[in-house]
Image 1 (tube, rainbow, N blue to C red):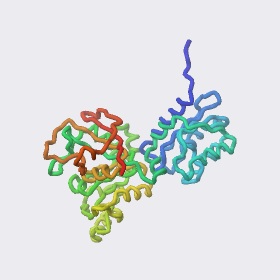
Image 2: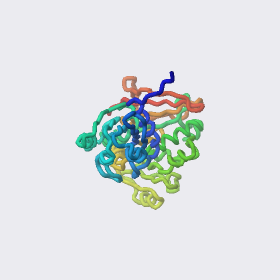
Image 3: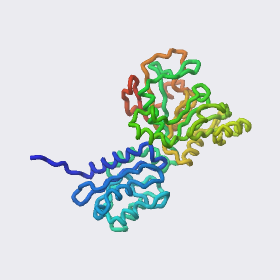
Image 4: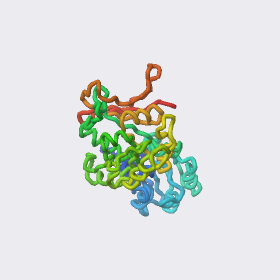
Length: 381
């Protein structure tokens, strides 16, 4: 006897999560959301996902796919349907008008000002509401959006590449290339899912990077890569004294560049960088006269940045880590030895074992000839 697989609520929500993942590189600053609609027999009649900010949400796409079959149907959606009008209309109203009978959601809207209101509107319209379902997996779709909505800060990833002996660059500052092509393609994908890429002036001066997303280096199918590179992340330079060269590559191209400095910066240097196309802003300075990193993160959150990627040298990366601002640490370990005079991974003022900074390794996998180590930080400051 042939057994026919039957859709379960868990499998249907898992499918909605798969759909949401298609928007990994394109939905910012909106969350990644997927939606599946089934008829009374559990047969899928509509699917959709949010593709780009300003375009229809996942529920609207799925309702269009389902058409009249949406009446009396069950909706599986990874995030609570919105109940407010932004660049698109409220999804709750569309669901009510379509005549769906039940909505199963993955997680509630993390915005404390609106969370739960969409669900209540559906209940008020006599639509059965159930959830959360597969909440942890749904939350994993949007870690940066959740953090920005709840704490007013973006999710911070710090990316570094090091040799087997824990070095990132030669004493001269030369660092191209510590890691191999597969690791560099992986970094391109990290950039593409980020709203902003943060670096320091020393990296700009030594390496002269573009810090943009390049479709031909992402190791993705061509159309997906081109879509991922369509909207470039904001490039951010932390430069307390405005020493960024006006002809630096990071100031060129279509991607926007933000230079963050302090009041002590030379006004003439500011004018020079603005003429070169950069936006220059003054932020509070910390105890050592550098740009206050918390103020920087708050500014990026105000600019609707969900996830940011720190790509910098040992000084700035170490400062982010030491101050407890890093949520996820990604290190590419290359099968090379750079020697004892080469530069360390981080500059951290630690002198005793009792002061070490704890991290938890969550993943380790081969990326080409290198290894990628992913860790979360347990640092509170």
